[in-house]
Length: 497
Image (cartoon, rainbow, N blue to C red; front, side, top):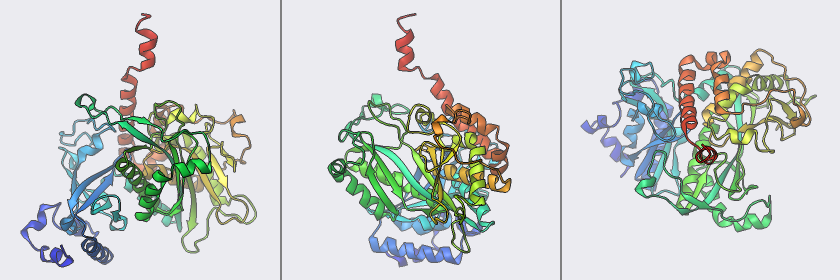
């Protein structure tokens, strides 16, 4: 396979067999810069002898959905787009379809999303990577378009792109620092019997790699080095700016921190990070999970601490830094927006039923809507001091399974509302757990979704179409959870009554 092979097939009858012929040009995305980038990628495909490229997009849940395109057809995929069924936006995390996707509007209220027909993933060529752990395999994320040529309004990537565009119009860019925890456990029983292939499937049996609760121990880190090193190499191999990969507190718990990344690339990095960790671990007979609180003995809850600031595009200066105070007016008002909309934002930072197992049951997690200076018990922690160019805010309430585009995008939107309305967050507070006068974070996904549904700010910023779809997805999950008969109920009532 050579680059010339691609060029000789551009006018062939086979050109229109993948995607929609010349779709990218028809929607105005076929710029000279993109053509130049495609040429470089095709040369890289040829040089590394790639066989497959996984072209993907990220769904409402934050799950990457991919189609493995033969590498020789990637030029077509880049020009024509890759079709995916709109029904993917009507699936829960167990892949159950919960609305009539064969209706004329597919249950989405849009004729262009009816009949479980096609939408088109247009590769963002800047996200192209070669996966060092997979056999001759490339990987690329995409923007979603409907067959009409308009962006798919449910595409989570669009939410964050739009938020970043709003910042750009004010001469600002978003800077996100990723600090995310997960569990890596040894898979002892895959439970692949057909009886276990339910929807969702029976989870594998697992055991710890070693005992936990020896925080920051050199010996523990060294013992886990045979697991840590392949993950490190994978993350670095796909150009993620790894800062720390550490053994966390609990058995099988790890923490991964990246250097700060700007705008949409920060969220893209989380998708790639989670894929790398899970896939590399699978190849070692391990299971990596970004679930907050697995139902396993003696495991600790995992969180996603989102570090964030704004940067002046022209000067490169940190917009949160103040020469004569802890935080600039821009930063103060950004905090004000985060606190003002914290309960509604929780539906994005903690989008699963399980995420709330951490917020009000773990003594190391925040539980109230407040901010503090360098106190990790607060929902919003200010890191830095007067004149510090690294001054930033850390939201400590998020869960590792959150959709990064919606988590970060919602933070930008809430912060910008605080900036626009000059919302005063008050003084940072000491002893966050003692501030019983401050509002509680939601106790459940149901509380958070109700707060989001009632949020005029988010409805104005994101549109009713997206908010109503997102709430429908989350309430479907809540309904499934509420219908499930738990072990507690069975033990409590089965014999007694």
